[in-house]
Image (cartoon, rainbow, N blue to C red; front, side, top):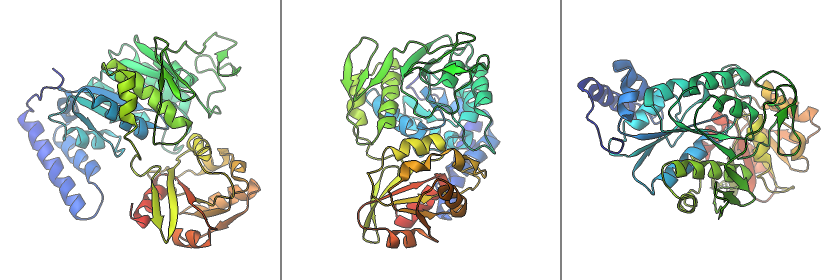
Length: 412
């Protein structure tokens, strides 16, 4: 029964012990948290370990292109109202990192797990989740991930017949197509600012019609389902029509949408929306995202944006011009080595901001900004950019490994 720690097999115990030892050695060597390498070693010793570690937990899986880490954190805070939670809070979201996280949860009742989109089917098969939250699907890491329509089809196949309650974004046609194969779906009107990956019908390939917040295919009739939960301004509307105020320390409409989905997930486990939303207020930052730090006598806000949809949402968060903005882009393995996505971002939204460009692929970004008609300076380092930036708080927007580089530099 979930919440009662079931004994692990001798093989599983050996795998967990070995994984923790390797992770500790990695940390001692200054090579990061060690969660990934530790998980890899543990799974090598016991390929069935993930399922064994999850057998006593009520598991929630959270997947999508954007918002996974934040939504995972918000759900975890909500469910702590009902019992102890284990979670991969720092975003190690592939099987190895998930295994390391669950190895710490022997006394927990709930497992709240962020899962990379490509691994959702495999992880769901292993851990038999009680709930699966599907946020959105958009282009990301084009050199690694499948095209969004293919990914939606893969999700659809894996969700057919699942016993889990699927909590899905009714405003994303790709997510709706994927979730519609599931027998038990809770639809959430979470919104969709980025629409460029959802203009063709995933069911038949026809052109989607998108009047206002609605959407439908004029050819096959595939259409937006009626949501039972919705984000309405600064409130969550529950299935009974009650409006619950959202009070977050995290900024922006996207995080209100994440909170709405999180409240719907909490309800699956019996946590009332008022309780869930009150607990979410405790979250000030998520793995460094939204942190405001002091560096070289200046105040910097750290913002993560990994793909066109994420950059669009982030542009809506920054203070008005003439607030200076530092943009940082890398293209390492964890980012995806293809930077063609830069051309899908509307950088004219930054007009009026003094812009400073850093990162491994700063010249790629510089070309894109030049074409967008923006005025900017290319800098060799964060330090140089901060020195050149005019007075006032500096907004820093970075993709994944560039964000980690910035955090290390500012001591965050």
